[in-house]
Image (cartoon, rainbow, N blue to C red):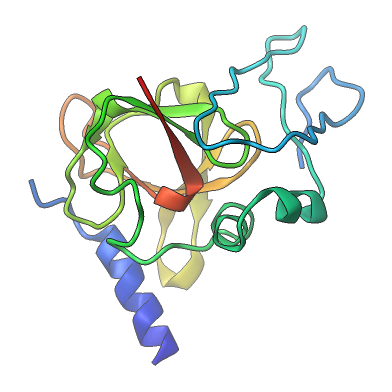
Length: 181
């Protein structure tokens, strides 16, 4: 039964829409002890070589900062159940930031209704703010989306989105915080 539920969950995210690396040049890992608030944008910082400065923490540090569900999704690549996230039906103007480090990832201007049960976007704020990895778990080949600064799992990107990009970034609500304009 457990595997059937996982399969159904993955299939719904894959359904077409209905309408600890430190940046080169740094001598040590960048560590932050601050606790994020739900309405904070933490601007990107770049090192002398122009590389995005990474946030690197131990699992214990992440566990003390994140809720259990945020930790499961962001650090262990879990997935929240479809249609349960608090940002699925958010239609306010603002910025969606990584729940782990506050990096601005998506704008409300790029959000659209995909009918999948997860917030969907046709593009990130800046391509370099997300990292795309190949994901072959569960017998499927997908493209995983991570926050480029902290490595937090966000969701997956698919080639069935609207114009102008044709992409659908299918993102877990729990991986994001919303900052209203």
